[in-house]
Image (tube, rainbow over all chains, first blue to last red; front, top):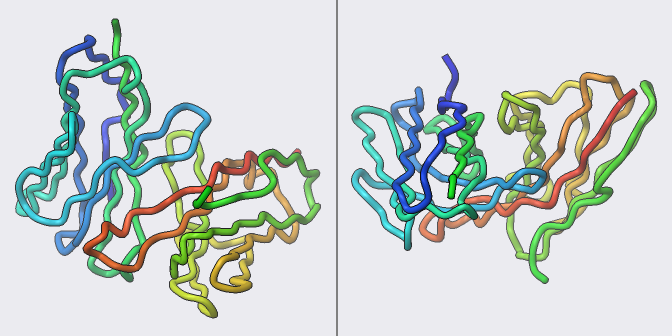
Amino acid sequence: QKEVEQNSGPLSVPEGAIASLNCTYSDRGSQSFFWYRQYSGKSPELIMFIYSNGDKEDGRFTAQLNKASQYVSLLIRDSQPSDSATYLCAVNRATDSWGKLQFGAGTQVVVTP
Amino acid sequence: NAGVTQTPKFQVLKTGQSMTLQCAQDMNHNSMYWYRQDPGMGLRLIYYSASEGTTDKGEVPNGYNVSRLNKREFSLRLESAAPSQTSVYFCASSDPYPMTGGGYTFGSGTRLTVV
């Protein structure tokens, strides 16, 4: 079992719709959770981080964390063609020092006009 | 501009050659990391440095060495390159304070091909 699992996609989303991405993790004691966006041929860039159960909103992005079920999700509202990218989930495990992250393989999102 | 600077951006090596990937950050971050990214595998940690003067192995350290030269610079060395080391390499640094996020700032990456 991978430490951090994501569906590879591609996830095809019509423009203006909501894209829903999921990520599950195996270490129940994981402390912090991150979502990165990576355009093809570019480096990952941080979108959001979340520490506590519940929802966290930032513009069109909402991160949702459920520690009991060990998943974190990312919602992208009003999806735009510029949101087409690979989205990486990352987790700071309880057994790791602060800052050391485990990454999922990413979900490719394609927003169609 | 503040950020993480990696050099070179592209490199082709012959099997057995050596090279050093350079990384420097100007954000006063304590922690620095080297990852490799392969298709379908995601980002895998090679080595990291929690603070100046310390380095630790990550998930895939074999065939690599690192040096934390000072707080700003963290280099990755391939002593004898192998085709299995063909990958995209990313350097990253992070803010040590949890309440400000702790997320990474990545460099632009080095595309390395070993033939």
